[in-house]
Image 1 (tube, rainbow, N blue to C red):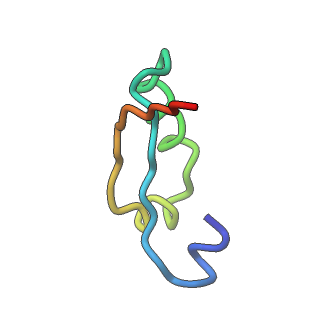
Image 2 (image 1 turned 180 degrees about the horizontal axis):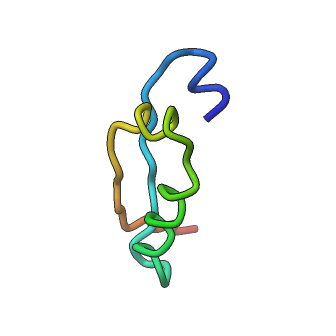
Image 3 (image 1 turned 90 degrees about the vertical axis):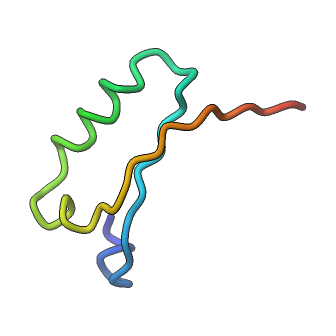
Length: 53
């Protein structure tokens, strides 16, 4: 968030839907944000992230 604030750019919070507790992760992260950081957040993305090596 510090870099986003310094550059004055919006923030997208991303979480992996395949991980247990994805909604708790998103709510917990949001609750830890300051008021200024909450205003900078533009969206939340729940994505299935697959790595095929």
